[in-house]
Image 1 (tube, rainbow, N blue to C red):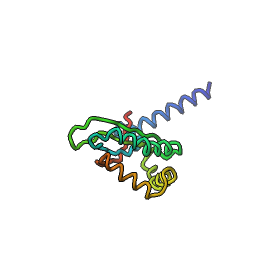
Image 2 (image 1 turned 90 degrees about the horizontal axis):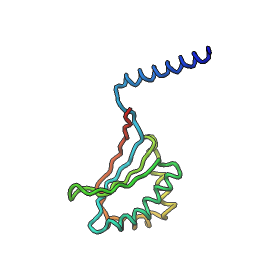
Image 3 (image 1 turned 135 degrees about the vertical axis):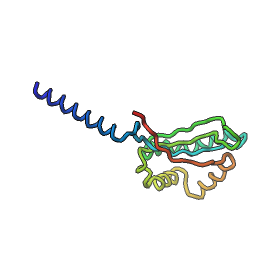
Image 4 (image 1 turned 60 degrees about the vertical axis):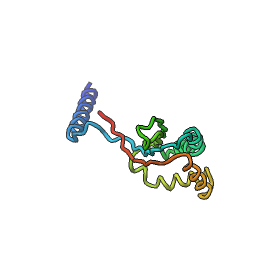
Length: 147
């Protein structure tokens, strides 16, 4: 019985310490994973062709990067543009935190070279992709997880 009371007391103490620490920060959230987001505008009539191109390239890289634990997840969102200058596709991949970005570009480049060949070959594919879409920009965003 004495061990049980000590265990309960310890649990309550830990709960109190955590609650106090949360209250002192004043933030109603904790920092979650980091998302790298790209905004794409497909050119008129090129949406399906671009999605096929995406499936043959970016999606394969993301699947392999996920299997190697370089990224946590990836997503593609489609939406109707709000204006003529707005995106219609959003490409995203998730990292555990900002520290996971360290050295990631070199690892991803090695992965692309392994999967798709030399830089010259990849450059030709990139030029062809530019006929299908315009990259409007990107952001690195931190997910906020509310308590």
